Image (tube, rainbow, N blue to C red; front, side):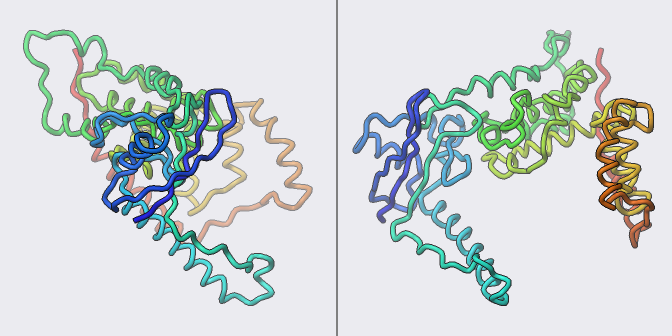
Length: 364
């Protein structure tokens, strides 16, 4: 089959440009196979990283049709099927839209362009990292974020004991998912929080951080959780967009690991500890009480720390005044229907989480 590759190329500190290549390929060929052929047969100057070609090393991560993935894992046929599924979903939305009255459609009912006859693959370098050349990016920020969480078993845990350090199968199983991370950078590339906040260490780093929190051999759990409990660089800077889970080729689910660290912090902190902790605790408490959030109390208790943070209270003044003038300040709160059922569900989930929280072995 004939396919087309549009590759975003760039030299360091220069403007990117698109280069187009056509190949005759088999559906089972990987994207990396195709890039190799382009480099060997058409353009020897094309730069990209590769190594194992077997979804182990993570070297060949790049953006393939708009999302970060491993070029050695994605096949031509599989990628075409993915794009067709996305297109079919778009057609379904357009069909539903087409059934709406004409006066509701506005200018959105213009005909869409016909799909290209030749399947086209758009290849670009990973995001959140400066480009060195073509598809090769500078990953120093990625590695710095990982180093910042100290992803090694503590010194005490590394000391050679008189006998081996034993772990139960359950203790070892807690490390399996995060241990699958191959540091490909896909999650970091697509991280919205990192894009707007250069202090955020990244989902890859916090997934590794949870591995240390969960490791029964580590003796620095409390100190680690204090380090990870930072509003700008730690777990609270995550925007919970779920894209890191979506693009991870090894199903590490970085967001899930970040959530586990948050829960460890919440279990140890009261609501006065920080605004980030208060936000989570107050939100849950208010929903338990009324089925949804009493916005009047939410601002006062989270930002104002229940009248203990005078600076926070003062910051609410201008917003509250504007809301009052425009008639948008709720003067009373009505619980939602089924508030009791909502409360029961939350308490049931909390009971399950409490029962499933692993107990760590005491450290010497």
